[in-house]
Image 1 (cartoon, rainbow, N blue to C red):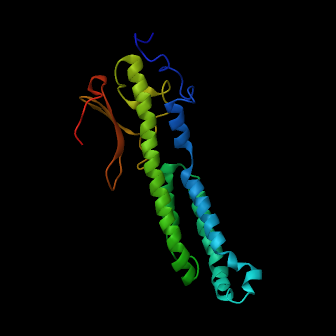
Image 2 (cartoon, rainbow, N blue to C red):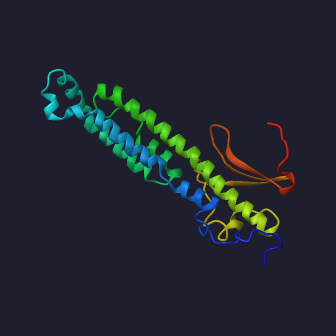
Image 3 (tube, one colour):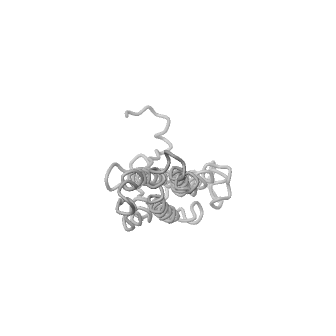
Length: 220
């Protein structure tokens, strides 16, 4: 039986509170932002290359543009379609696959198409991929943090490790999208910290204070 004053819903199975913070965070974490962005990029670039249509190619002023588009459109669609397929993979596998496929290269297609569109694909791929990685890291840390707080409220102390939250509070320990390892979990004198480890910059994570340390003014 939970101790007096415990959260009455803290031992509910994961997902049993679809309207609560845990359910909302899990729904947000599962939303494939990179995939939607990649599909939007493919549609956008295909629209820009629409002068390749035969009816426009016959119009004065469109012939040169149509010639470039006719050569560049297939290469651009191949690159953006490959990008869409990579975006369907688990978040933590996308970066490695992007590098393996060389999606940011400019060798596919004629020179003008390379200059105009491959650079745009490269920039969009970097923005979409890095943005999704950071967002996923923040959301996964938040999902684990809510589970750890529910555990604390129900049992009077922090979980010894994130594995202790499975299956009562988490379906599985979330993985770090930057390194494919479980999220890092640290006990501190005044609480706990949950992190994702970014190899090239500061870590992404959340700190949870003990109950007696909350609602206090702190420095930056």
